[in-house]
Length: 105
Image (cartoon, rainbow, N blue to C red; front, side, top):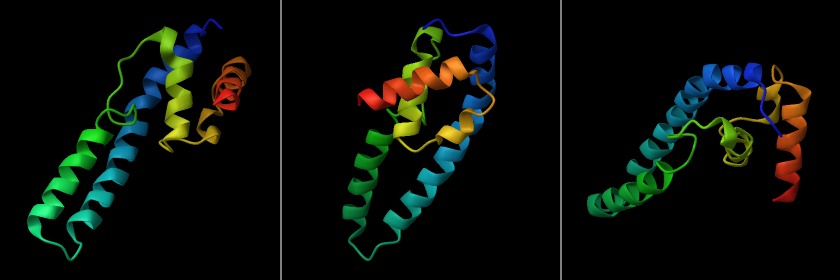
């Protein structure tokens, strides 16, 4: 499916807010991890492992390619960065393509 200019523009407008919200969620999880009653070194290494995993997710860092947008949106939904309702302003064609991609998972 060819992504429309309108959907591409809307995605570029929304992605920063989606990522900021997701990183806020991650920061709260990191605080919980660091607040556990464990050795400081255990907490440090657990946090380092978690950050290394999280920083590769599209909710944190995303290379913006129009050709990858449907996949990226599906991954954002899968990772619970956004929910399908966050796509209300997007075209029905885009929502159908994302839905189809998610159903194949």
